[in-house]
Length: 202
Image 1 (tube, rainbow, N blue to C red):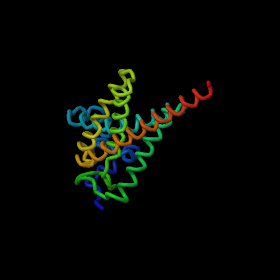
Image 2 (tube, rainbow, N blue to C red; image 1 turned 180 degrees about the vertical axis):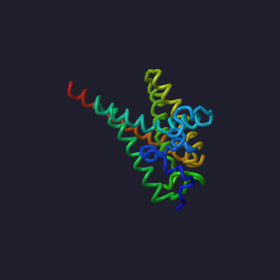
Image 3 (cartoon, one colour; image 1 turned 30 degrees about the vertical axis):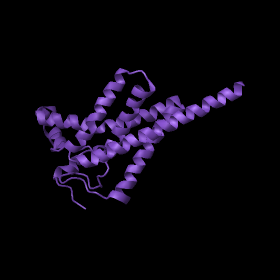
Image 4 (cartoon, helix red, strand yellow; image 1 turned 120 degrees about the vertical axis):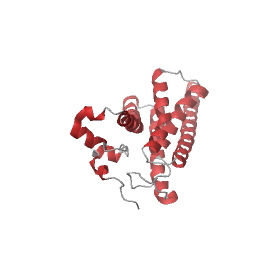
């Protein structure tokens, strides 16, 4: 296993390290020494943007969890469950099957194939697009913002040297597969519920 390539890896906040979203430069050290003025450089601001984009799957996952607790409906349960199953699958196949290291220069020592961030992004984006384009769900502004953000997630993982293009493509493909399975399960559950309601009325 590789060792962390930079001394400043240890300077990242624990929450950032746990989410595998540390910037390339000694970002937090610069911020501590010079404040916001030290982050005026365009490159550092771009890195901050990439870090924020890398955190989008975690933020959306939290939102999905809150929606599940609030709505407690079948769609929210299946959607959150699909994301959870995808994440568990990612962690298992990384260690048991692929065992492929992250690219040289990565701060993370964990295996990198497939990219869990890309799985989440692919699942989320595919789920929303299928619901809109196939099922006919109404397109809203929040959907556009979320999908655009998710489309940038794999690039942010490559930019921050957490994954290779191959690892992100694998992740996105697996995410798409989970989206199809989750939506199919949701459709079948709705169909069964409607059939039961019809039988009760008869």
